[in-house]
Length: 186
Image (cartoon, rainbow, N blue to C red):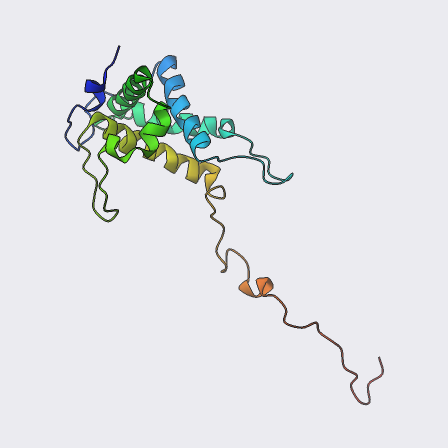
């Protein structure tokens, strides 16, 4: 069993060194559990209207899987395999403690990950839990936003050339009334 001593162990801020390799199915399943927990924690991908077709994070699985495999199997050093293994073990340790939802703790417990109280100050990545949050959870959130969660986080296209004219969104002050023009029959 993995204990609290595991996720509080100090680490340097750089990526955990590991050789690139293909992830085992059990590792992919454990990482997918983290990804879907993000969906639940932020209440994303729920039906807001009948036209909304994305019902859960499973629609993003192929995009997410491609991202994870590229990170793990990349020939450039360091590989993310060490970070993925660490995140899986951190979640297992949090789960073994039985002190609340392990994902909620990993995502939101600032003391657990050593986050700075000052949002403008860089948080020291000094523990295994901090590595799991910064190198895995935050990366997965980025994948979710980029892949299709952009609208779920409240984003929309800007009112410009690509978003269409901003003038078609201006509310009318008064209704237009056609006035007769002298000498012209209507």
